[in-house]
Image (tube, rainbow, N blue to C red; front, side):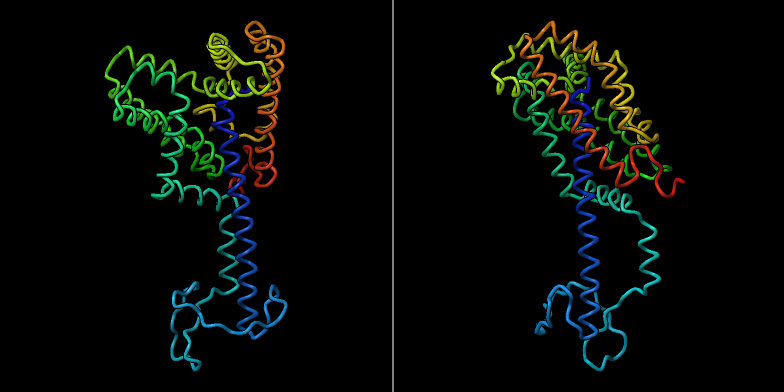
Length: 334
């Protein structure tokens, strides 16, 4: 029930958010320490991190700190422009840690390096998960490259949506959601035009609708092989259909994908709702899976599902506890 779309569209994003959070916290600490050391050195006192006064060394020609000349300094050195304590505190108060992360994610995603990295990861992912469909379509190298760029961008868009909405201000969330929907619709139009075949377009739509399940089966295949209970092709096909049916009929796809993401981040208690949805669908899913897999394979399947849920809830729990997220209001929302 807790399908791979939650893992790829949710947990991976949470993992990225956690990593960024750690980077920001560490960075803020380093900046704070650096500011203290600079102040101490300017006053002629040894920096705390050194333990003793360090011999002065020439400053590199490429200065790390911006400088501005303010009149004739007797020492012959340009004075460093600094903010007053009041200005510095006001600037920090205006931006909370979660807003800093949101701004960092946005800046990176819009940078040339960020876009190239995202595109490369999306294509790599699409090449893996669309492998059976690529064999069916039998594209030329150029056609395959174009297909992977479009399909990969669409497949990876959920990850970005979770991050943007999770760290966006309340008043900005609808705009973020609308931009995501418009971009997704544009990619769909481009894909339909590229395939230029009603039959191929229908096949792509059916496959893409089951992409979360294909991704999960890819992971299950490896887990089953490691456990000594490999899946056969018929079992894989049936698993995809059973899990897809469960995801749609249980309402998971509606509540946790697309616009459902906006609803989730706008309400407190995402972890609890996720666990409730998981428990509600397990009985029906296990019933279907047990008709496809052997008892040993069912055990491996259940372990994989449990581990997935734990990863998601642990990551989300960290974000909720650290940034008052999981639907909680941002400081400016209250």
